[in-house]
Length: 155
Image (cartoon, rainbow, N blue to C red):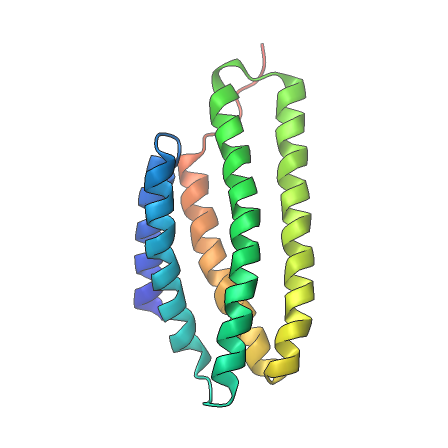
């Protein structure tokens, strides 16, 4: 899994650089990441033959919803980038509020799907899955934080 996570981080690093310039490159990178991520999750989960079909079905459903939330986050980052040079206090506050709303939406989704995963997996495997998801998200967030500059003081 460690090797796959490093690959995911490298893909995301490239994605972050392209995200401001070319939505098509972002989508291509997302598709590559999707494949790498699925391989990492498969390696981490060690599913039985009976667990596997239900897990992958729910995994796909969950990741479709994650895609929507991550697209909203991309839009906030793009809005930040578009307004960076002429940032106002009001715009900065709006962007922060939007980002926090996305975080709350993500947390709600995780809570909802954790309950669903518990219906098809033992607790340890349900938690392991969300741990793996969190590790991947942390890699993505770390790469994004390297690419996104801090706000400058409004003068």
